[in-house]
Structure formats: structure tokens, C-alpha cells
Amino acid sequence: MDKLSRLFTWRKRQPCVLSSESAPVMHVMAIQDSKGLDATRIAQTLLPRGRFELVPSSDLLPDTLAQPTLSAEQPSPVQAGTIAALLDLFAEGKTFGSLVTVPDEIADALPALKAHIQPDERDDIFQREAKQALAPLVDQAELLGRQYDAVVANPPYMGGKGMNALLKSYVGKSYKDGKSDLFSAFIERGFTLISQSGYHSMVTMENWMFLNSFQNIREKILNSYYIISMAHMPYLGKGGTSMGISFGTAATVIRKARIAGTKGNYCCIRYFETDENFVPIEFPPRNERLARTSCDDFKKIPGSPVAYWLSPNAYDVFEKSQKFEDVA
Image 1 (cartoon, rainbow, N blue to C red):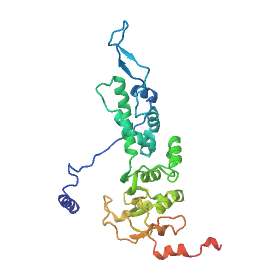
Image 2 (image 1 turned 30 degrees about the vertical axis):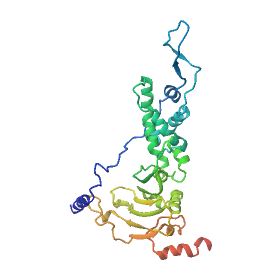
Image 3 (image 1 turned 90 degrees about the vertical axis):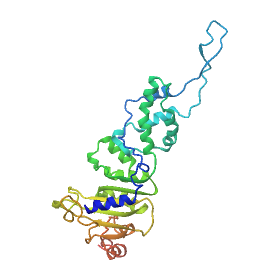
């Protein structure tokens, strides 16, 4: 109750937060796919193929009869190829979800396409249907093609054995550093969604911190970005984790910037350091793993594991001492 009281007190002091005037616009959507949509037919329905004029006639035809000119093409900012590319991009939208990346050529064409599919009272039934079919695809392409100040997620966890052939192939080709698991592919995807110096915050399995199969994505993070903070909730066997589950997790905030030597804050929360609702009794727990260290220290260890609890002397041993493999 004390925490709740402090929250209400803070809210009173910050009247603009969550107010109707400053409330963020929420884009909540389930990614749709384009199966069943015919790109050629939609393009023929929406894009002008010719121009027709009322012309006077000196023969027996009435003056008001519409006569075609020499099929003069009307200029259009939207090309049929754009519509085809958009439909192709989301052919497996329900399977790939927000792992879909939007190429620059499609992103650049979206404003014109969005303007072109706005409802018009002069639309016939075929034009209305075509515009309604394209609208959700344009909206989700627009959101997935932007860059943001922060990305926050709890991505799905699934190893390669659990993926179907289509998903496994797509992840392997599109996310080579994070292909070991679906969550690590989302870690990689998150960095493409944020602008330079943006924030990347996810709750994931702890595996990426240590295992060799995640070394590429781990080294990419350590070499290109820096970890601001991490709450590590390890799996301890029979006791489970502090979240009451049977696998370890890590909640991490990473900055999309590289500042050598910058230290981050790390803590470890174990199941016996939480109450019956798995809420930490103290945060951060003041145990032997509470640490402040730099990503550069992890790179001193072969494989670059995120061993944040080691002492400065231990990092120096890995960096300066002779290796066993060099002598035996």
C-alpha cells in the first residue's frame, strides 16, 4: 500500500502524465497477411488506365455521349508494382508478425498509396473493396517501417526445433545473428526499429547471456551498443526462478549507442529473494551479484559471456594471464 500511495503522490505532482491532452496514440494491431488478394486485380481497380472526356459530335451520336480519347494515361503517384510488393511483403504476415521488415522503396511509396486509398463517395463497390483490403496492410507497413525512441517487448521463446520450415527459413535468412531462437531474432529486430541512441528494453530467456549458440548476437550487443541495466532472474533447478517459472530470464535495457567504458547496473533476483507473489522483497537485492560493470569487461572472457558478477581482478586474469591451451 505504501508503494501505491507513493505512485498516487507522484501522479499528482505530474498532472500532464497520462492526461487526455498528452495521452499517446495507441496503435494496437494483429499483423494481417495478404493471402487471397490479387495484386493485379487491385491495381486495375484503383489505378487509372485512361482518360475519358465529353466531346461534341457532328454525326448521329448525341453530343453528351462520352467518347474515349487516344487512351491518354493519367499520371499517378502510385504504381502497380508498389501494390504487388506490399502484398508480397505480407504474404506470410500472420506467421512472421513484426519480424517483417519494410524495404525503403516500399516505405517511401506508402504516403502516396495511403492518400490514394482514402474513401471517396464516388467509389464504386469494387474500388471500396480494394481500398478496404489494402488499408490494414498500409497501416501495419507504416508502423513497422518507422523508427522509434524506444522498443519494449517480451518476445516469444521458440527454438529452431519448434519452428515450422517457413519460419525457420525466414529467421535464418533475415536474422543471422539471432537465428538460434525466436526471442533472439526479436532482439535483433528491436535494434532495427529504434533510432540511433534509442532504448531497447526486453524480457527474454537468459540463454543469450552465456551459450555459444547466441555468441553472435551477444557480441553484436557488446561491440555496438551498451547495457544500461539488467535484472537477471536465473533458473536454479528445483527452486525455479523469481518469476515462478522453470527457465531463467533477464530484463535488460540497452542503449543503441557505443560509449566505451560506460558502466551499467546489474542485479540478480533469485526465488528465495521474493515474496509469495514473486515480488522482490528488496530491489535491487543486495546480494553478492549486485554489480556495476562495463560491457568491455565481458569481452575479456572467451566467448564474451555476460558474467557481470566477476570482480575486476577476475576480468584481468582472463585478459592478461596465459591460457591453459597455450601451454598444454
